[in-house]
Length: 592
Image (spheres, rainbow, N blue to C red):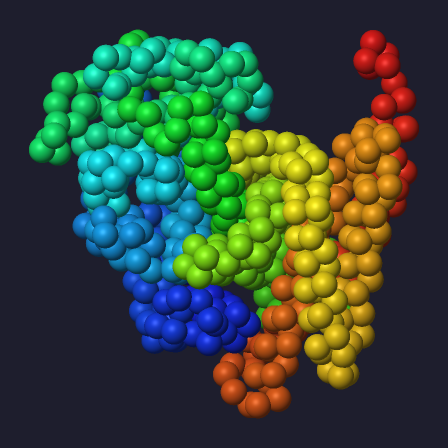
């Protein structure tokens, strides 16, 4: 059976040695000293390893069941949910005005990484609630906030997002769910939504659905869409639960993975709904939830890769097969552990370099979110908007790939349920699909985000990388292994962006055909930047003689591996982009 060890040491290294959070000029960050973050992360790590992880295989085996409209979650899920709720973990970064603890999103992300690594399907219940909370908090009326948020922050009530319908996914302008206005100011919601995560379950007393629907007068396409709160149970003026609303679960999806989470068909049969924000302006409100969810899915991709790598490493250190070609490393045993073999070592280094680099990328992005929310920094808001499709698309592609590499490390054992790695592969696969497929993420990046603010944000990113390289140009210890490779990869990214500017308008297929490669090129540059920053912090610690020398030396070695073996992919992606769309579009549709 698989295990999970919280990466507390690496988390603290990132927070305090690389990102230097307590020194950052972000509101509330001065309180994030090592002792405080250590206490929070250690307690969260215990819950992840001791409460959530043992239920991961249980949830996978049992799944959820639907009987007479009632969904039952796997054995142990309700007790674990109650334990996290009672500990205040569900409102970690929520507004104190509604019962939250008001901690930074960064700390919540670090905690979330551990919870997702331990049990991705379980954590989705509270993850969806947080997204619904955020949408109501930003766009709801004062009355709506007072009515719904305290119980959602506590975890007493949960939340969902309802977008997809049987005939449309990404193209939300095609939705058919109707919202009919009533004399009392409410709306009657009628339609069907599919693939609704946590749409029905037995963990909370009420479920607050956020539903996209079309009200009269909105016109065609997405401009006519509005967002509505549709609670499972209607809520009285005094906050008490009333009658069951006309919303039911019509079925559960039989899925490849995340069996412990209920993925539902939701039927709305004239259900009572309450408008959130402005009429016909629902997409703006829903994007608050969707953008948060995309960051969360990026964390999921990383987290599944992280736990898979841990178990692959343990196997490679224990499994005896063959002898080291340079001489036996276990002379008293029948064979050497497979970690001595270069191909296995390459496999593990690919995993380790991604996991540690991806973790830094996520935390860096979370700091931008805090800077935007807490300081009202518009430049930080623009930057994280640019990077969101990269975080979602690149980290989930690479996260899934990492689970497959981990499975490969185990050989035939990785293909069996007994060892548990195959569940990580199956669970990670959905991250590349939901909240906008990774192809859609790449199109969003190239088609919208790259040109946003007349390209100023993209230029700001390039300038930031250039500035960091220039700031450290006197660091001989970093130049050859880190600064020079980062500079070359950044030049490739700029060249790709210039190609789109020169070719994208006249020949849009040239930009669209290269979008996926651009997303990966961007991701590699971001991880290259993160590894360069980590290398500097590790080298500074070694020079000062502080901390764990073995840890810092391993960090440098892993960083050198990424820069030498992974970052050169930037040149490959640029070559693909510059080849244009001709070979991609050469075959007529009928010729396939």
